[in-house]
Image (cartoon, rainbow, N blue to C red):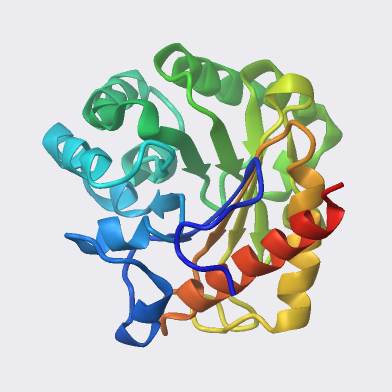
Length: 260
């Protein structure tokens, strides 16, 4: 098992939604002054979902950034006010407020997650205007998790490329295509995987065979130049931590075996 702080596969980041550490998993982590600082002794990325539900003050982000090493990155979920209530329409002011608030993370803002409601169909004009506004306010990588079938049509690929957006690979997936990473190609390619637990979302633990398959997929996506991030969100019974740690070990083994 890989100990806290050991080598990690280049360009592959593994983490959890949030940084809660069940007591039974404390042995996986080093010491720290807070839950976040302890979490960061093992993992180098976390996804913050609380930004979807409520705004946070800039000093909160500053405190989080100060709690983790320089290599650590945060992924933040856009507020539901923007994605679910406004449905991407007339969101310029809300986007400005959001990115002003999260500026406290500085360079540790590693990604922005745009999760869309299942009922939101693709509208080329709306999507183009929205992601254009995002890009005018944010240089960080952006991942989008669409959940309506219309977003998986080939005609959407040009949008992903234009605004350098990764399409999330989700588990469980509503559609077969939703299980696969896609989106921007070329130098801007970035794959973002969100695994929520299956068959029971948020609760189920992944078996070792499934994690081994995922590890190989991530290593394939993460080499030689394209970053691959995987977030475990099966947090209801604390399985995200053990699954992420096991996945991390598997990836380390794959990369070590492939080294000259």
